[in-house]
Length: 78
Image (cartoon, rainbow, N blue to C red; front, side, top):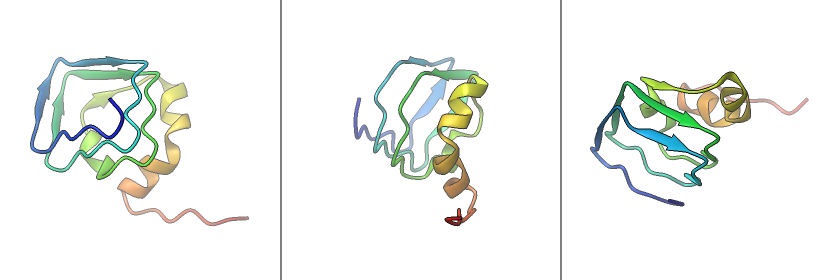
């Protein structure tokens, strides 16, 4: 599912498991009661649209850069 386009998609009770969603476009997408487990969200476009998705903590940690970018946090090199 690499570089999928979820433009204006309304997803309810969707389950994504071990999917390559790198480069996914989420513009206008909405999620309700949906879950992502083990998915690659690197280079996701408009990651702030993931609001409403449930993820295991380990997946949240792995996608920290994308999630931070989605809410406007600029990560500094140390």
